[in-house]
Structures are given as C-alpha cells and as structure tokens.
Length: 419
Picture 1 (cartoon, helix red, strand yellow):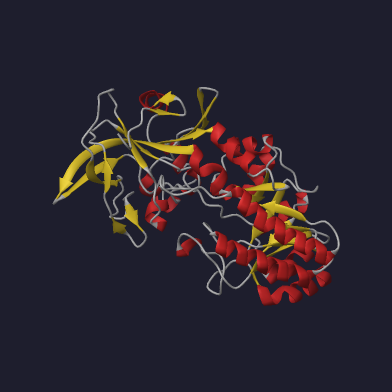
Picture 2 (picture 1 turned 60 degrees about the vertical axis):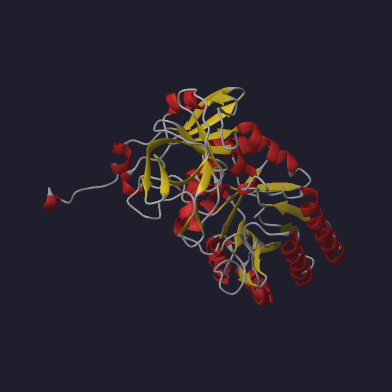
C-alpha cells in the first residue's frame, strides 16, 4: 500500500526507534553524496549550511569537495571546526549576510574569509575592520520568486541584497574602503522555475557588463527545488547548468577573461536524505475528523507550520502486522498550539491525508526533512532537541545526541533576590 514503509536506509524502522528513540532525524549518507555528484558540472559547489549545519554533515561535504557558505558567526565557527579555512580560490568559507555583528567581523578578519555583502553599509564597515578583504555583491535584481512568500528573496519588499541600481555606488564605496569587489551573486528565492531562472541569468549578464573587468566569479545562488510531492518532476540539472553556463560565457566575452561559476545549494543536497521518525501516541476523532497525534511538533519540524510546506508521510507498523484501510487523517503534534499540525497548507489551512490505519505505538515518518528540519528546531514548550542519526554502509551512528533537560537549562540563572 502507498505510504507504508518498513525500513529507512535499509534498516528496520522499529529497530531505529528502539536504538535512538523518537522523534529522531535519520539521514542517509549515500543520498547526500548522490546529490553532490549531480552538480559536478559546476566548478564550485558551495553548500548553504543554514539548511543543515550539523558538523557531521559539514564534514561529509568537505570530504566530497564541497565548500560552504556561512550566514552567521556561529556557522563560520562550525565550518572552522571541521577543517574549512578562509582564503584560497575558491575559499573554503564565504560569509553571506545583509549586516555584520561584531562576532562575525572578528572571525572574518582573523581567518581572512571573503564576504558576500547584501547591504552597501557593509562595504564601508568591512573596509574599516579588514582592509583588503575580498567581496562579492549580492544583487537584488528587482524581482523574486519562491514556493512561499516567506522565501522570496528578491524584489522591493525583500530585505535581501543590494538594489540593482546601486551597483556603481557600491563599486565606488569598495574603492574608497580598500576592499576588492570581484564577484556578483544573485539568489531570488527557493524553488525558482526555468522562466524565472532565465530572467535571473539575463539580469546577471547585465550587472556583469556594468561591473566590467574586475569580475572574477559569479554565483548562481541556491534555491534548487526538490520534489516534495511524489508526482513532481525532478529539476533538470543539465538545463539549469546550461542556462548559467550560457550566461557565464556571455560575461566572459564581455570582461575578456575566464569567470568562475559557483552554485550554492542547501535544500537540494540534504532535504531528501532525511526522514523524521516519530511515534503515534494517540489516535482520536474530533467531529468528523480523525487525528494521529505524534511525539514530534513544530518545535521539531517547523516548515509545515511556518510555510504550509508539504512533506510526504508514511506509516510503519510497530509490531510487524499487515496494515490496510487507508483513511483520511490529520497529523498533529503535542504542542499547546492549534497550529501544531503537519498536514496544513500556507495560511494555516488544515487538510487531511489518506494514510494507512495506524494504532498507538506505530511509527509515522515525515519524509524529505533534511533541509530546515533539525536546523530550525527549538526548545519551545521546553522540549528536548531530537537526535540526529546518520546511516552509512548499513550502520546507523549518532551525530547529535538527544538533548537533556539539564542542557536546556544550563545557561539560565535565578537572581539572588528570588532565591
């Protein structure tokens, strides 16, 4: 029956639950390595680690020749921890943001990390803190696209990037600040289709012509989609690369020298590698609706509540029995919020799924949870962060322990006046 599973990564679901508990994020290493291989046409693959920043995942990226993008001082620290360095071409780490904080500036200066700036003010600030820094301009071309309004990163209502008409002003600021502006970056949102991608490529060519000879690298950004719905077609990577390579070649003719082409995937490399394993803790009816209540909530996986995002859902029997009789079901979590529902659309519209008939103790799997799953999880309701597990070569190994209550409270203090 559709939506029935017995194994994840070749390992029995009940055994994984017994060994690691639920909820738990279960990654399959070979899936990540397959996605990396699919992008090898690009000269530089730069993982947007905000999608999944566990240091084991970063170490796997490094082992496969993938460099990283960091959007915070903490992400720089993570990258350094697994052996990435600043400097070099391509640099192991690039910092991308729309502002600096002091922690980030200190690490950028100390480790000579190139910066992809999203605001003109950053150029002057960087020049004062780190003269001679290598800089890429993240350009907002004036339009955007995405699977949700919350992930649209272009256009006049987006905080991201330097407005396209400010390019020349930024070049002037860079010259005054003593930083080396040598690249352009465009990312207009997640899930871009070929029409929008072609428009972005055209905008990149126009911006590159205005920048001229100093240009050494262009970044296609990220946003490569994955088929969250089973019936969705996979993106044609050859076509995607072909559009950007055509743009790159046009730019090279204009500037008169080779230009490096980077791609910056996050979701594409990790989303499909991970299943969120949960357990059904209650089956009940409310009016005409049937509910499966599981031990993961939006503290564990926030995408459905935040974006109305869709994840395929499967059921695994806890006792090896045969399951049948698919039923319309709402899947929800344990949090004290009406929005703690995994089967909802953007705007909070609750929907049902046709799922196998489960009982308390069965396991429910939310698929494609590797991107913005563990990375966006929280301690809301003082719930422990779920463990992360990697399956490789037929064995499962913990890559993040389940958090303890003591760890949650370790930095909190009661003032003496309340003791």
